Image 1 (tube, rainbow, N blue to C red):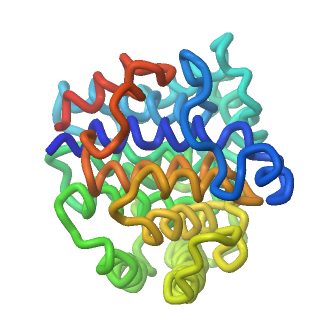
Image 2 (cartoon, helix red, strand yellow):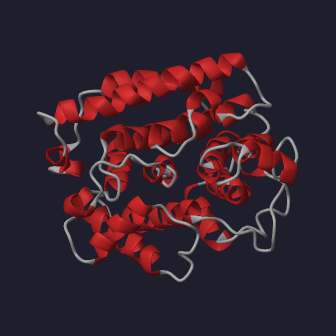
Length: 332
């Protein structure tokens, strides 16, 4: 099953559906698009946002790195730096990107060490809306996948919750692509939180923790895992409620920060585990960071169901189709 392609195209489809609704209220969304939000891709090509652009940057750099083993922080860090700076300077970087990513990438472009360029107190969803390729990359140990997921987040977002949520997003994609039943996902993610709550990946993160007020690296990371656990608790409440029609942000949050984006993206997927288009439409029809929520929902749905679950014809119309296909083909 072509689950890597399903993930990459799914995140782009969700991003494209959520882009026009991102700053709208639920009332405005329903007036413009109906009760269930945008029904399909708009335009040819259907434009995406910085979410997909940066996910491609992460993925293409990973392709290059995995062709030059061994895969280490010293190998991938300059590759991600270059791709992020290329994104910063691209004329297509005009999709209302987040201030954290812009500020941090300006620091990277100026040659600062990434631990100084990152925005230490930011846990915005930009940390985990681009991490899906780390979940898809083959042949990584759990420790390497965790460290890499956190590092790509840390280049711009230095808050421990951004790091933890990015790791959980990557592992959710990996587990779904490996065939995990969606009903088991929340418990598996919660177990991961408990297992990793005092782990600091020093080889990948260096001295990042020292930019916080934490007494030691373990205390630094524990905050991130605690906030993710709280978000997963809210996710379970929302899934049990099973409301497929209301604003998905009501219980799990608006998604502007990493743990809420993870929980609300998961909620949209788990409400419609076998209906990927309905999952991303639910994400797009939300009062919060609609493009990022739908982007994550699309990544989870694509990892679970594969490329064939998406409508015929969408892959020819989505922006950056060649880049998405390149990453997907490499790892399918």
